[in-house]
Structures are given as structure tokens and as C-alpha cells.
Length: 182
Image (cartoon, rainbow, N blue to C red; front, side):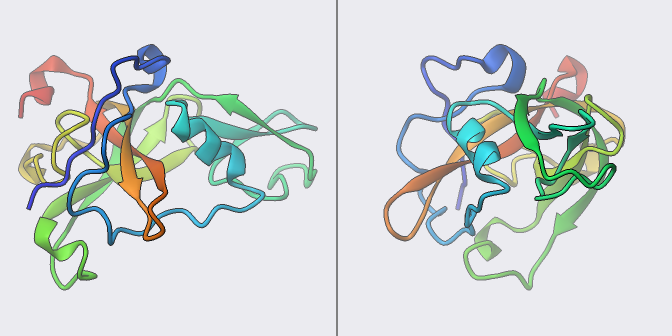
């Protein structure tokens, strides 16, 4: 079974944060977990829906933080805002998911899951799938080709919820033409 992500015909602001889908939800993604959404993460998910990777910024000290949270871990302020990030980073670590997995994920195994250090700061890291292009399967990248420190950029994949609504999940593609073909 293949799991893909689509690309919109107007990927604004894809120059910074990559493409996102406006097409139908890929077959096989219906049982995947989606965000529950809460006050702290609402701005992040609003950003993914429009093709922007957003980070929470403290309204008092100005430091970026991810994952989103109610209080700044540095100055303890509860003031917060959202800022668009570049959507670029480097692979900090990765794992290869193998069975046993939850039933919805088992047909795609094995597949790589990467941890990305964002260009905005060494303490800002995100987890996601490494894909070869936005509409490709999550298992399309050979884990043996992944190199710690290689550059990546975010793309957005549309996923379905059981109620028929959808959300956009960040995934990552390589930016180095040498390794992108692997």
C-alpha cells in the first residue's frame, strides 16, 4: 500500500515552507492519528492548513519554542504569538519503524521517521516522515541512504479524520540534489 501526499497547484508560500495538498486525501491514511487541537497548538495547525510552518514565540522574551505550550520555559510568561518559520532544517536523528505497529501503519512498514533540527535554532526539533516528494509514500526513502546532518525542507500532506474533515501534516524532503534522488 502506498501513502502519498499531494501538491497544490498554487503552493504559496512553498518557496519557504514547501508544498501542500489541495487534492483528495490519499487512500490508506484514514486510520492515521491526527491532531486533537488545543489552545496551545491551534496556531501551528492553522499554519499547516495554509502551507506555513509556524513556531510559537514568547510575547515577553521573544524566544521561539516548539512544541507549543502555555508557558515560556525560559521566562515563564504566558504571552504567546505565532511566527512563520523558514521550513528548513537538518536531520538530527532517525528511526526505522518496524512491526508491530498500530494496524493503520503496519502496511507501510518499514519506513523512516526523522527528527529535524530547524534552522531557527538548535533546540527547535520536529519529528516527521522523510519522503522523496510531497505525493510519495512514507516508505519511499531507503533508510540506508539517510545521513545525519543532511538538509531538508518541510512539505505538507493532507490526512483524513474519521468524521470526514482533514488536516495537513508536516513531512520532510531532502534539499540536496545529490541525496534527493536516493
